Image 1 (cartoon, rainbow, N blue to C red):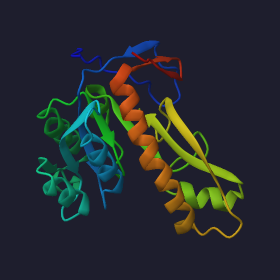
Image 2 (image 1 turned 180 degrees about the vertical axis):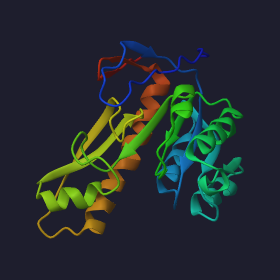
Image 3 (image 1 turned 30 degrees about the vertical axis):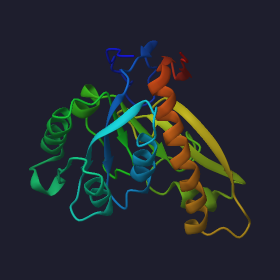
Image 4 (image 1 turned 60 degrees about the vertical axis):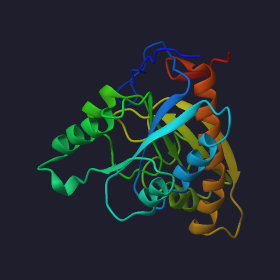
Length: 226
């Protein structure tokens, strides 16, 4: 069923978000942003290839050239683009260029799938963005979440899917799943277990948003099922 997309307005940092509803058309048009090997991207590509999945990837964007994520897009004939920070005089100019590149594909939802750049004000003001994080937010935000969890000695960590806002990993939490920390875990071993959960959780989140959208009341996200 076709529905007009209603963009989610995210709050800045830890300020309360407005009570609002996110509704997406079917299929949901996705632009996926990636910076590396693209394993999260591949999980989304595999899911969208299934009959009846309520979303499709219309483009893949990157902040660097020569990465496997771009190769994955090429293999399945999905358009891709690269917007490098180094090619722009400052981050605001880069953010503007990235916004324009993504807007060309008219996405209903942007998925940040291992994208290692903080999105700017113009971008976040234009699109609804879903991000993944390898910890149970609000614990261990930032680039070294898995390492920080191990150093803190926690017994449980996990994966979070959340809406991106102007803070670092501070947006409203959509979905989470716990991963037990084993006594002999290294950072790499633990991260691999988290990634397996992360891939599945991201796909499940996209599917549920595509089938019914959600409401955001303050910082509480509730799926709406049709």
